[in-house]
Image (cartoon, one colour):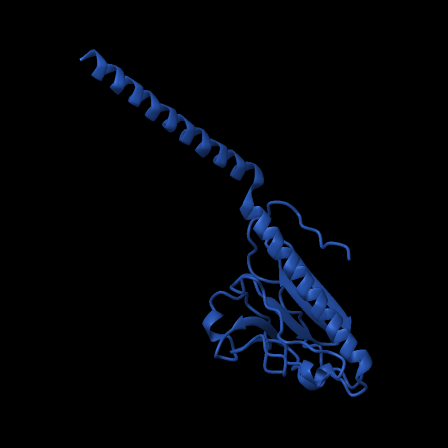
Length: 208
């Protein structure tokens, strides 16, 4: 009986050790997650991609307007229309009407069934493939690309590209239109966007 009792005691002690080690590992993982905050890192990564995408699109349109004598934003884009990167078979973005912010009178949303196309059928209605200097495989879209996170494009006297950041900020880049008669302003400007998620820490665009 004494031998059996010693063996049982030794085996129980080993199980307790394993339990303690597993508990410490779980606690350590919890502390690392709290310190590292991977979700915040992922959100900042997505915001950095948004900043890069909008800057790239802005530069591309600027390059087309300066290197193509016949380039006219107005020939591609309708005034008082907010072109957005959300995919929808309805050009009026009917699938998202309840999730998008209201627009001023006379304004409307425009969606594409294939928003990454570069031939003018994507979410930006400019034929990027017409440029002899640019080779763009597809238009960038928001990493989430669901309301309230999407890209938008409008054109009046200047074109405007906008992205909604998960930091709670907006990134807006504008550039003057070039050449040709400019479309009417349509009065009131389109809204800056719907309700933004709570801000954790301001995210400033990185310097390039």
